[in-house]
Each structure stands twice: as C-alpha cells, then as structure tokens.
Amino acid sequence: MVHMDITPYVESLRRDLLAAADAAGPEARAVTERLAFALDPAARLALMEAVSQAAAEITAELPSGGVDVRLNGRELEFAVHAPPPAPPAAPAPPPPPGVDETEDDGSVARITLRIPESVKTRAEELANRSGHSLNTWLVNIVRGATREGAINVDIDLSSIPFVGGNDPFGGTDPFGGKRPGKRMSGWV
View 1 (tube, rainbow, N blue to C red):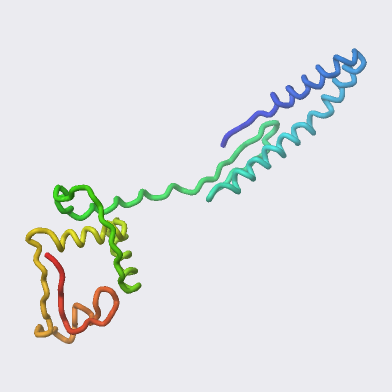
View 2 (cartoon, rainbow, N blue to C red):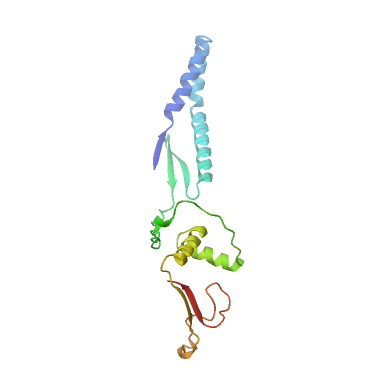
C-alpha cells in the first residue's frame, strides 16, 4: 500500500491565497487567513476526488487489476490490485535441423502456388506448430525434397494386415481427405 500526504498541496494553496490577498492590504489578508482555514477540508476533498478520478482512469486502461484510493486520516492510500504473474511460458521448441544454407546464393524467387483451401489451412497449422511461418515451412519442405541424396518414398501399405481392423492411418490423409488406398509417401 502506498501513502500520499496531501497536506503539502493544501498548504501550497493556502500560501498562494495569502500571497494574492497581500496585494489587497492587511484587512484582505486577515479575511483570507480565516477563509483558508475554512477551505482546508474542501481543498482536501477536491484533491482526493481528482486523485480518485485519475485512479479510475488508470484502472480503465489496465488489462486487469486496478487502483483504489482510500482516505486514512489526512493521508491518501493507494491499493494496487494486480493479477498474479502468469507462469513463465514454455520455451519454444527448437527449430528442426536446418538444411545446409551454404547452397543458397541469397537470391529469392517468387512463385504462385495454388492448393485447396483445406490443404493450406492444415499446412498453416503445421507451420505454426513448428514455430515457422507458412512460407518458411514450405521452403524447408521443398529444400528437403530437392536436397542432394533426398529419397522420395512411396510405399503401398494395402498388403499389410492391421490386427482387429485397427488402421493406424485412420483411413484419411493428413490433410483431412479420404485416403485413396493405404499409401505413404514423402522425402527422407
């Protein structure tokens, strides 16, 4: 809890009023002194209302938590309510082993790739899961497929019996469509 003594601000207001009254003469100063003491509670209340309004505006801007202002005797107390700190984020998974970049000469070529929306959506999910943009993920796949010594695998699995009809491939391709037969293909 933070405390704020508003007495220095009320005293500053009283001094300023007295300085203004000095210009009007000793009678005006005497009246101003009496008024300044009478205005003390009203000045404190006005300051507290201004500070409370500021706290309300700060609270409205915070994503969570808030600031309360309380009067304790002649002092203001500020109570700051903050949410508990979020647990530390899990470290990002390490990027997949990269392909040797020395083969790249630094130039970039642009292509247009037309694929079904469902395939694009699934590719974006896989790219996000690996911590890459869709473009980077696609570039890495093309690099793997075009790398020297890359092996294109295309295996027909239809002759392998699955015990109890428990097909580990689920009968669908990885992009959500029906699997035509039981084949596995890709680059190693």
